[in-house]
Amino acid sequence: MMTETTARNGELVSRVQQLRLNNQLGADRGGGGGATWLPWVLCLVLALAWAGVGIRSYRNAEANPQTAAASGQPAATSAGSTPPPAAVVPGTIQLEVKGYLVPAQQIAVSPIEVAGRLIVLNVVEGKSFKQGEVLAQIEAVNYQAQLTESQSALLSAQGRLEASKQKLAGLLPGSVRKVEITQVEEELKEADAQLSRMMDEVGRLERLGASAADKESKQARFDMLANEAKVRRLTATLSILKEGPREEQKAAARADVQAALAEVEVAKARLAQAQWRLDNCTIRSPIDGTVLTKKAELGNLVNPLAFAASSGSVCDIANLADLEVDLEIPERDISKLKAGQRCRLKADAYTDRTYEGRLDRIMPIANRAKSIVNVRVKVALPPGEIPGTFLKPEMGAVVSFLAEEGKKPEGT
Image 1 (tube, rainbow, N blue to C red):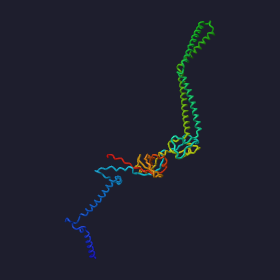
Image 2 (spheres, rainbow, N blue to C red):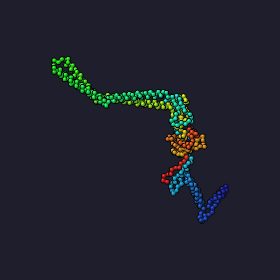
Image 3 (cartoon, rainbow, N blue to C red):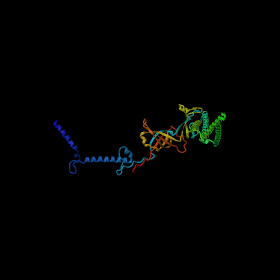
């Protein structure tokens, strides 16, 4: 048994020796031991393979620097420096998003602070109006009466103002005529002369003593005292005419004038308000635009202060020559856009018509529930196209944002 096992082992050893590399390849030509160059050949093959992979990566990075940057590989270099990224080809589509057309300015037209029944209505859907043209007319009997009342109140206030001014002017020194002062001065001279004569008479009677009649003496004294009072009165009157009345009276007269002036201003304000309300009974177009929706009929009662919005508005009007596209841009794409960027758009209803546009504004706040940012693209209508013929508010449209040539990096 052991002899058979030994024979098998010997046969196995013999086969292993036949498989040895040095026996298969023969003796070393240099006269040395077994062949040792095969591992070096394998290393050389692996090196050549990796060199080929590196050359392909280098060429791809040189052809497309953005792809190289995204994969984490450095872009190709020349003389040890990093070249600038390749410029984006202008006019290529950078991003496409679907949105909806909206007017840049849409106004719900209604009367302002007036309410009444519509007696004139020119509103028709699709009809265009120039700014200031009449859309509707409200019955204005009540507002005309308020205007007439305000006019009368103003006239009354102006009359009171004039009277108070005249009263104040009568208290000023400049209002006294020279003839009035002269008259008082003459009366005062006459009174002084009479007083001197009476004083002489009283002195004469006193010198007569008891022989003078008591009654005559008393009468002369009374006349003298009365004349003295007249002189004092005329003297005071002359002083008042020259100096004017007291300051208290003047201040009171000035206050009356100021109060009358305030009444006039209040009356003017009420008159202006009444006129404004009467003018508002004629509802005019606030802009050049087209009627989008009609919200009232002839004979309806319109009231802008009512809770129901439909009872206060006459129509919605917008300028269809100034349209925008409202778009929702994902946050990951918003960095590709900037204000003023060129766009092209096609309405879903007219795919054969292409319109130019530009990115007008990017909204300053995002919608975190949708992870989007709203933007508005301004639409440019081609010359000769009547606004509203093809593009209408709330239509769907696809906007293509066109790439623009990037700025060259600094130092190039």
